[in-house]
Image 1 (tube, rainbow, N blue to C red):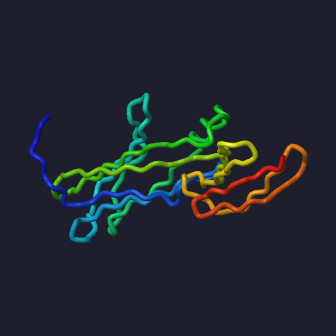
Image 2 (image 1 turned 60 degrees about the vertical axis):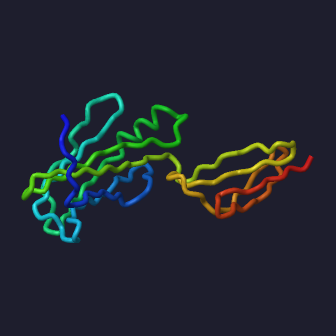
Length: 178
């Protein structure tokens, strides 16, 4: 279907309350429809679908935005955490959603997307081996991928411990005594 491109008259957006969710936490999502001149789209019709790579999109919610142009939605993370429980090699998994908002006065539709990340751990640590024996690096990131500044205590095989502090990039150099 080929049609003439028309500039959007309003913006559709979706924002989750967190960047990742631990077990037992559900996502609170605020979906907004706002005209380019800043006023809310009154009576905006909202449709939210879950997109799975191997299946057809599934309708999650539909409704009418409030007078402020917002539609609030709670998304259960239980199915994502079940996927994590089934595959212990995964640290996190994402659920992808598509939002379609229709302006009732013009019948034009705009779309937005959002992802919900479920994780078993809020902090992810990775070991990066150095090019020479006796040192390496540890990286610390939050489950959303942002670097984490933190103190990490490392217990060596002989029982000796050392504490390193990651920098603003989430990296710390670790040196081992021979």
